[in-house]
Image (cartoon, rainbow, N blue to C red; front, side):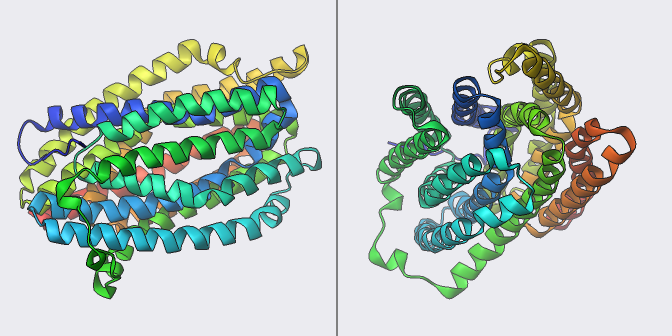
Length: 445
């Protein structure tokens, strides 16, 4: 049976860390999807295939981030009902979330398939990687309902304090993904499309695993009435989820502007940029885990009327988040070239040039990683308190800082200026979020 957890009693630092740890491990395995795809594609299919994979990064993340924003927003209300012990309201919230998620996934699927080629062309994707990039995107977009189902299932479990079930789902799915990647690409010769198919099949397995355990939770035994769409409840859920989805979407659009600039630097630069971008998820794997933990922790304590514990949790999560970011940064600076070498192939000249670009970018992000961790923790606390508008404003700041830096800085210091677009985006968002936190927490007390 899924192990739910109340986070309204006990030491905040212990609760947050023990809740985040399985999420962290699960996220590591989830990142294996991306890392293994990249390794197999980069090593087996070459630099051009790696560049094609990279050309889809932000377009793929656009859809995924919208899905994550919606489902995480839905989870905020679930956590508040669970913390307050309102099980009937919790069931209705889950039921309406399922219906909204289903409708949203179909809209995203149709929109994604229609806009894939035009956007790739708009981003000036080089002709020699365009068709592979389009194939990968079409397969991934066709599987968006699967991605939505997994993220909603995981969000339900996390809102109830269960971080272990998503962990086990991710471990199982990651192992399946590795096996299918090798089989589809190396044995069947399905190329970049095989890598995409392997990822979707693995996601389906993780979704089914989570759904199986949700059905074992007694107070989530659903009736047909729970799945009746209620206008007031649905609007409330969308008011929580839509700003988070919009926030993630506008961040993704900023990333597309970065990709547009990167595409103008040639295939070798795209490949080096891609190699490091595929480690982005590894860099922030603990940050997203602490973020999920803080949304649940804050939502439950707000529902229980214990706002004083939110401040304690904020301090505790910042402490462990900063310590974690320094540790990850040190590992990347020491072993980054070894890790990046797993993604890159080609002639000696291609390998050397690609590695130089990739490691420079990795070093810049690693040194500034604490900024990203402050961003995730602070944003998640504000979201957990039911305010998703101020984080959306921070997302708009990210967009502006990322886009302006990407367009202007390379003109003054050359191609490497693009590497600082992420850092400036993080910094702009953190300034807004820190100010917002003090405003929101003061109003709640």
